[in-house]
Length: 257
Image 1: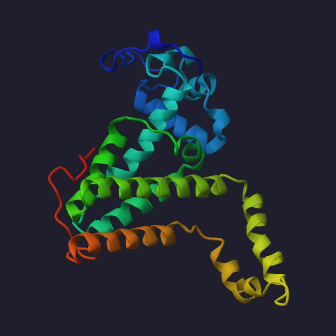
Image 2: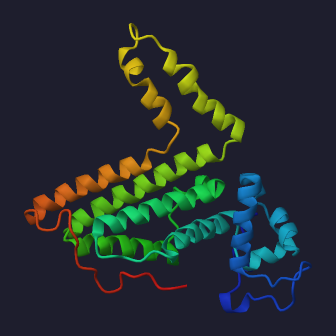
Image 3: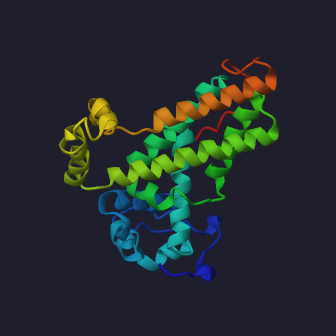
């Protein structure tokens, strides 16, 4: 999909008057939804104008009315994944529980679309859903009592941790099932059989390694990050709201779709 900046038309003028060959009316939302499906089914190679056009039953050139190029579409895909994270999320007023819930939603959303997550987790979209996510997370932290500089520092760590684990675990999920099983089997076939005289620490913990290394470490890492943030808040506030709840500021609830 090559760059065609001059072809992109304003949103109000984009709606196709006639259905495509498959009987659907083309829209930016439909193209993004189709791109997500193709990525999930066929991987990164599916993100081409020709494949999207075939899947939509539309002339491939029609896609340039909505997106400048493949990268523009990828940013829209990334923003859609963020939007799905926020769609059903509602703050409770407990900052730690709210951030944990958001983090786990980011992670599970990435695993639902691993190919898209691998391609887009490191991108900054600057689009509506991402802007709402930044506003929301900073609002949770500021509402809990973190000073602005601390709120940004923890926001940065929280988001990078979530996206890093999302990309890591999504890449593993995107492997063929046989390859995933083979990698998990290494812990049983190799590590669990190492002798205690040469590898005492691995031998002592082998059964835990076999059990734990099959799972994502993200929930543990997330709890550790939030625990460190709570300890920092206790230092700042003298213990006032480190493990408790904080006020929810106006505008914290994401707009309903």
